[in-house]
Length: 340
Image (cartoon, rainbow, N blue to C red):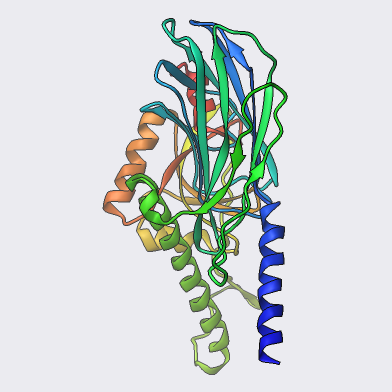
C-alpha cells in the first residue's frame, strides 16, 4: 500500500510539473539578416501564466551591437556590458504581454552573430531560470524573419529529474535550438538582483505581519474596554481615517512608490510607520493596491526624494513612478516626453 501511495504521489508531481511547463515561455521575433551600420527591431512575447512578482528578462548581444528601449510593459530597461535587460519588481497582470527594443549594428560587424537570453522569475519562493532560445542573425547576408520560443519547467524539490529539452521550430535554415529550464539559486543572480529580491521579501513579510496584527486587534476588540468614541454630532461616531486616493493632476508628474499589497491597508499606516513628510495615496493598478507619496514635476526631484526616504526613513525598495494626466505610464515614457 505504501509503495502504491508513493508511486501515485510521484505521478501527480510529474503531471503538475508538466502542466507548469506550459505556463511560461518566451518567443522572439527578429530578422534573419541585417547590414552593417543598420538598425533592426527585436520583438519578444512573454507568456507568464500565473507567475507574478519579481522577474528579469535578459538578452546578451555580440560585441559591436548596442540596444535602445522600445515597448517595456512597465519594466525598467537597461543596456550595459552587451546585455539588454528588462527588470520588474512585479510582473504585469496580463498572462501574456509584448516587449521590444532596437539593435544598432556596428559598421565593422559581419558574418553570423548569436543572441542568447534568459528569463528569471519567482515561483513558490524559488528562483526559476528559463533559457530563451538563441537567435542567429547573419550580418551582411539575406534571409527571412524567424520566430523561436522557450518553455519553462519549474523546479520540483520532491523529484530529482533532468528536464526534457524542448526543440523549437524555426522558419529559416538556422540550426535547431533547444530550450531548457534550470532551477537557479541566488548565486546565479547579480548582487543588484539579489538585493531587489530580498527587498521584495521584506515588503511581503511586513504586509503579512500587518495583516496578522489587524486580525488580532479585530479578534480582541470585544474583550477590551475602550473609551467612548469622539462624536461630531449626537449618534454619529467618527470612523478611522479612510485610505486616500491621489487627486488627478494634469500634465506629467513623478511620484515615489513605497509599497504594493493585495489587501486594503490604510494609507495612514505607511505614512505613520515610515514618518513620511508627504501624504501617502493608494491606487488600484494591475490587480494591486499601490501606495505612492510625493508629487514632483521632474524625475531628478522625485529620485532625490526616493533616495532620502530610503536612507533616512527606512522605506524598503522605493522607486520612482510616472503619470500623464492622472494615468500611470512608465518612467522611460515620461523621460522620452521630456526629451531626456
